[in-house]
Image (cartoon, rainbow, N blue to C red; front, side, top):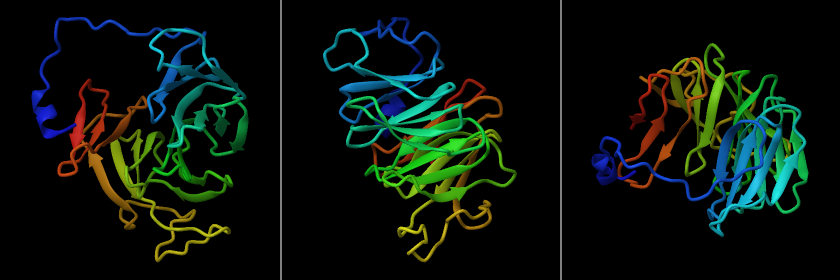
Amino acid sequence: LTNAQLESISAPSSTLLQPKLTLVGHYRGINDVAFSPTAAYLATASDDKTLRLWDVSRGSSGDALVEFRGHSNFVFSCKFNPQSNLLVSGSFDETVKLWDIRCGECVSTLPAHSDPVTGVDFNRDGTCIVSGSQDGLIRVWDTATGECLKTVYAEGNPPVGCVRFSPNGKYVLAGTLDSKLRLWNVAGRYGKTGESTSAFNYLNTRVTPTGGKCSKTYAGHENRRFCAFATFSSVNPLRQYVVSGSEDGKVYLYD
């Protein structure tokens, strides 16, 4: 959002917006939706344990192009890579799966966490995946090899409700069920063995807000029961925000 757009936000209009498309296929609730970078395709993640891929470029409803089966529990999160040929998903079966969208095949399964996976995301070039879980861990993975490059968690190990890479790929924003958002510095290059080649090593180390690896902590919103999603607003490079939902019914913007 730009400053002008933020200032133009007003009370909701009495005019009801009508849907352009209605996509029918899942038989249980849908937890997440994700547009491909070109906005031609839409992925949906559902409690029916599947993901589906839809062609929304035609402007007409129809059957899903691909149905992705393989998770053994609710699918809670999904994201496209920047090249739009891979889809990553996180599930209550505690795994992260990588899918080839052309054929619907699972190309990689990461035994990522010990509790439900609540968030996944690709970095800006698609070489890394971040996952967050109710086990309190935030993990960064090598997309090509499936190797866990980094594991971080906050003091007290609060459950993670959402994760998002920053637009430059150097940070991960994580929302946790202690009513806080934390911005983690995950910059650093890694060799084939996982050893850091930079001056900083964030590999599988216990990270606390006072340890110099959590760059910022945002507090003010309410988030203790549900997964309240948060993201970056970076349309205006001169005024960037972190935007968060809240259990008090408000939307919070942080500098």
